[in-house]
Length: 105
Image (cartoon, rainbow, N blue to C red; front, side, top):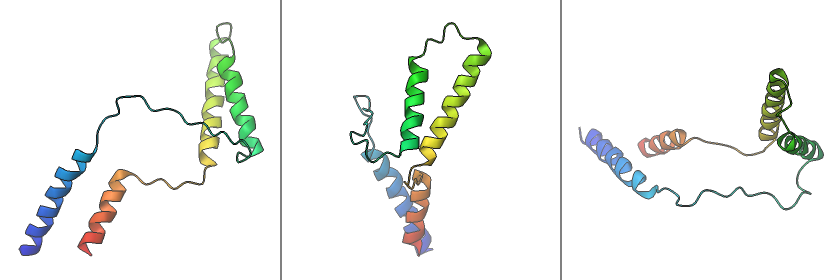
């Protein structure tokens, strides 16, 4: 019974303290672009250049199917660029579960 009460108090503190530290940004986030292009592989540079070409393109004279193909191409390029990163991404829910498991054990 005491353990249950302790765990409930810990969970209540988590719910109270965690949202208090979160605040909205008053300014929109700035996209940080890497200045060093030496770190970026050549195939990624080619994909990024292609995306810039598509953005600068005049799409008003294209047909519906051509615009659709361009959108698909941009999506596949973005997936490839994101997939080439070496980062590890953990959701906030997973972090909370991991912390609870550490506390319990």
